[in-house]
Image (cartoon, rainbow, N blue to C red):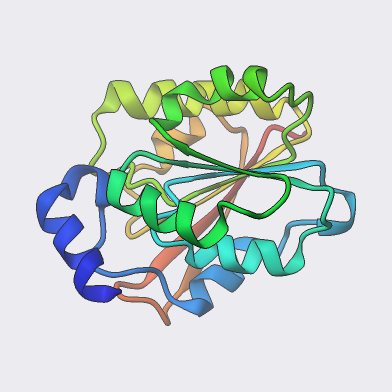
Length: 186
């Protein structure tokens, strides 16, 4: 799997953003604050090969809708083969910029969490702005946007859309990463 991931990085470095999948330790830190008992919908941006997805699916209530939005066609195919037959799991090959379209298409009224593996450091600013703006709208005041970044360079960009950001460092990942839990709760 790592060779496939590495190949996708060299083929599509802007949208892949890493040379290998995230570690289990990072995936645990990404989902540690999700309340799986009171969750209607979790959207995952850029799930790649499904490292975070795997942990989300292990813990979710079977009624919870999981929407995976993966831009990379190779990763999309991997996700489709792994999770395509699971009830309440929607796997989409598109940009996270179109989140609002899919929320409407699948008649989802409430998104509780967005778990993002998107490489904001390498995405064009306009694309990052559009994704963050739509995420803020879809999540409302009560939702939580959880992402990871390898540096804090894009925290100010994310802070333009989310008032409260809590950062935690995960050293047991290659490279080490910051997990950012973002809300608009006062």
